[in-house]
Image (tube, rainbow, N blue to C red):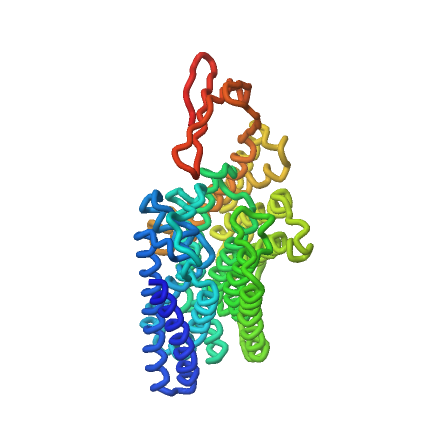
Length: 544
């Protein structure tokens, strides 16, 4: 089984390279090259599917003669977690990424149309890069010795949400290669307008998939690690947040380009940047740079893989940038905004703020590189830098639906402003009454701005549902952002924590409860169940 799986990966890599070369000949109009490229890409996909199926079968059958299975599975592991063990380690997660990318590539083959000859070489190059990493870190590598049982899956990962989180993240990563490919194809074809129409649905799909993966990971962290319910600023989690933020900016830039034919250069740069940051995040999490600063980071993979990971970033960034610099003068772009009192300016400023957020997170997450592994910023750095970002974003998403494209007269804007502004002021007064200002004055501004945005976008959503239901999605997403900001403030202000150390049979006061530690049971080698008794006001209950 290990031999067949390894052969399938090598065949997939060889076929991807053939597809790449064939498609490069098709750029000049060679129809035979295009047909060969299609056939080779399908063969590469088949190789990835076969390798993935064999690895799943190996987990199902507890084939501990394969090292990766022995490292992440055990005979007593439930069926769900035998499946999720597929992507628990570095090798398997690369294979999952390649599998999702290959399947998505088949859809792209059918949907690319006249863009196929220029889009597919770029996308195929990304697939070939992943397959190169896979043959270097092969999940089907035979074990040096046959194990009677495996080491099992980390108990923290034995959670249903962790079975969903990585596939969603890698689905987003794989999808972000497609707007990147369209952006490079636009530069090759000198077609700086139509690529946006083709790439926008894929960009939205990548944004939704990656965003869902981030939120699912946050919920898992809340359930399992107790991070507070929204974000812990863990460096590895930040690595997936950065491309999502850039993708957010790209979506708004694409909408602005479609409406006003502006930001053509900026959108090309954002599409290149989003995928480059996927590769950079992969480098950070898998190179061992963050091993001392994150519970999620992989160990040092060795010099060869480190070099390939770094080379991938350089190639994905500088090759398209060089092409963009050569074309930059011929890209004719419209005026981004005519008036400060316009939705155009709100969009532009929102894109800028989101990019600043991505830059701040990138700087903090990259600190171990700058300091040679000596330090990584604490959550306080991100919280302090993102209070102004949160306030500005909330104000902008609240203002945008009140403004018109190009320009709105000041009296008309004032008439539209009074309702949301009144709600924002009322929210600030309520927050003062609840003592929010005692924690941080920025929180008052955040509550007021978020309430302002909530009212404005909720009203815009209801209007859109009555007139143009399909256009209500953006407003509804902004309602979600406002609710999230209010939730972050509420969780920060209202949460309380105390730490106590107890030996079996000992009691202590914590958060108004009498807590007694009754000891623990060990259902298996990998976990312990701690038994507590909590008492308060004559009531008593058991907790495990």
